[in-house]
Image (cartoon, rainbow, N blue to C red; front, side, top):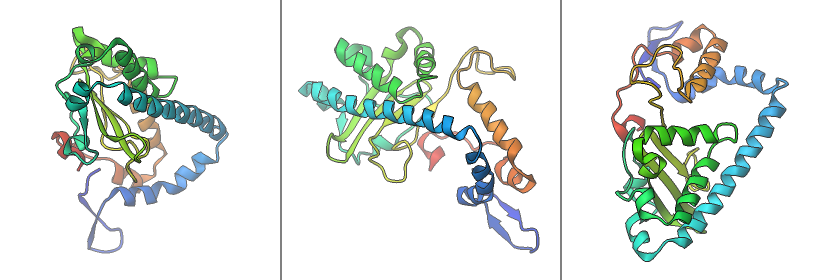
Length: 239
């Protein structure tokens, strides 16, 4: 979100727009949504997603234990290693591709861990996105890294590739929803897509964001809407 100053209604001074400011202005609207009849359905879906995430976290430990010494030297790092906080739109977190460096059982575990990080409704589509954008190598062209030690309270799995960076952290990072920055995108048809983004599996999220925007009042919209997006600079984009 932009931190450009905006004029105060009743004084000449300026203040900076922060995420906290925006959240404070939208809390009433959020409370109204929480009171809707859809709440129980949302809670049910959240519980299912939480269960799948927990299963993925358990499977990460199983994957770690299955690694050979050679594999651990190549893809395991201390929890505080700078690589854990990196993100980009198209990158490899290690130079070891899933299809070439891991056994068939390990490849299946990695795929299951990744799918389990997403809601049951969209997990298959998300995997298909990685397959599609990965080209000939598909999902197997991506890479993974493990940070920390299982059971220590500081342990994280990261998968990275083209248009994908996902994390499974076991709530190791306080105050970070995903344990660090994530990236997702989809080159469905072409780089420049038409307005309805045919085939893009994430277009539904953009439509939901539009619905949220319509709920905002004038001042909230002023805070939320930017004239230009921030420039993409890899990890620096989210700092």
